[in-house]
Length: 178
Image (cartoon, rainbow, N blue to C red; front, side, top):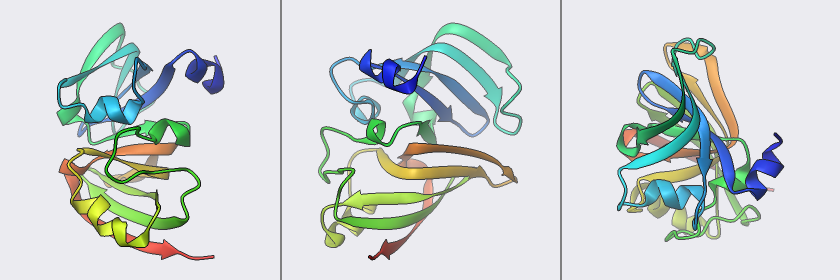
C-alpha cells in the first residue's frame, strides 16, 4: 500500500530505534499527529500493528513478527518516518513548518547512533531554545539519517526522524543560507 494511501487512512509506517532493536510497524493516528502522540505524557506506550522486530546490528533479520505490540516511548531513541509531513507536530512551543524560512543542518549523537539531518524554524534565535529548552521529549529532524556508530554502513533514513532528546549527547548546528 502506498505511503499516501496509508496517510489518508490515518496510518503511518515507522521504524522505532532502540539501543538493541529496530521495531517496525504501522501506527494508527487518532485525533493528533504522530509527534504529538509520542510527546503525550499521558501515555507511556505507543501501539503498533504489523510489528517486526530485528536486531539493530542486523536489521534485515526478523526475530519476531506479531499483529500488535506496544513500544515503551521512553526506551525509543529515535523514530524514522518516511514522509517529512509526518514529523510535524500540531502542539509545539516552536512551530515547525515545511516551508519555514530558516533551516539548520543538525548533527546529534544519541545512544548508539549518529544522526544527521535538519531543523526548520521560523526564527534563527529559536534554534538553541528549540534544541535544549523544549519540554517535549521528541523533536523532529527532517531529511534525516541515523547511522549505527559500531557499523556506519547500517543506516536508517527518512523524510523525518523523531529524536528522543533524553538520549542526545551533543547537538551541533549550522545555519544553511541561500
